[in-house]
Length: 107
Image 1 (cartoon, rainbow, N blue to C red):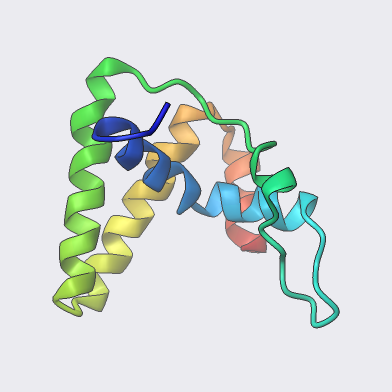
Image 2: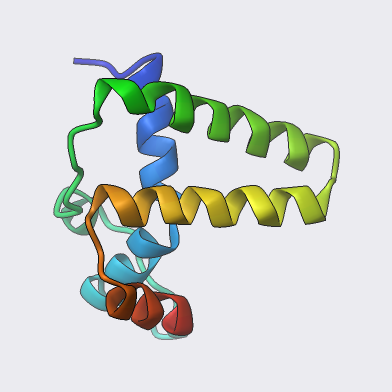
């Protein structure tokens, strides 16, 4: 089934988070140059939580605001919104402060 609307924005939030970057770096193979390879076999192993209905406004708005900040080359706003995105994802996965600290220091 093709993804559209809210599901697409939800996946954008998840896949662009520090948590998933950390996960893929720790589970996917690397090239001879040390670059992480986002292979299909690794990507399908990413645990994607089910979104709560009440969260659709939050992640939809985040995607829209990040896109606008990026389009307008507003680096400071982009970084603030990206941090909000990461904390939204940490909450979705119920991460502890210690787990968040590990991710933040290793990505």
